[in-house]
Amino acid sequence: MKKDRIAMIYELCQQTREVLVEDLAEALNVSCATIRRDLQKMEDMKLVHRFYGGAVMNKDMEIEPTMNAKHLVNISKKSQIAKYAAALIKDNDIVYIDAGTTTEMMIDYIHAKNILVVTQALSILDRLYERQIRCYTLGGYVKFSTNIIIDNDTIEKMANMNFNISFLGCNGIHSLFGFSTTNEIEAMLKKMIISKTENAYILADSSKFNQISNIKFAEKEDAVIITERLLEDLDYSSYGKIISISDPKNSLR
Image (cartoon, rainbow, N blue to C red):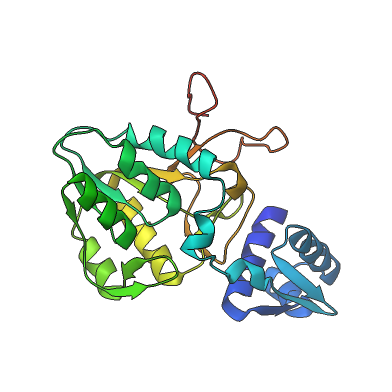
């Protein structure tokens, strides 16, 4: 099917950064004309840039904005999402909170008692300290662009932990490609967290939908999405479970 071909082509682009029409046609057992149409569709989706005989990854997908830049974008939307998410934490929960501007905003809205928050985000650790909320972090190197402490050992240690609830950020949510981010090690960590959590949530404002970053970390069914509203021109039927804060019933769709 077309969506399956596009997914396979995108994965090959991630691996090689450049693909050729003839090679793709042979690998996927379809005609070159079919591959050209698929690549045109992918270019329309801003996944690749076409050239004569092939395509290359869209490099804009690999750029991670700085945390300072992220703090200036969609502040009101992120605050709504953060407040709703924080209310889901129950007394005595073991919670994982991912790095990100929306997840950081959650700290001011947490009212549950006797919780333990695990995080690798330096800015979130500072906010937890200010609120005197019990917290824990694992060692690793500091990634300055997202202020997160992470390396391969971090992921191995995280495999021994379990969480009642987790809140994760992402760079993109797409009906075909699921949840994605820009960094391979961070993607591995997010995937690990989801596998060790009873209830995993992705916090994402409406601008993250129909977007794809260069590293996939989960299928869209693996976590519940919390967003501020549903866009009228986007079909959400293939996005898995979504909580829309603007929906009076906050119903799962």
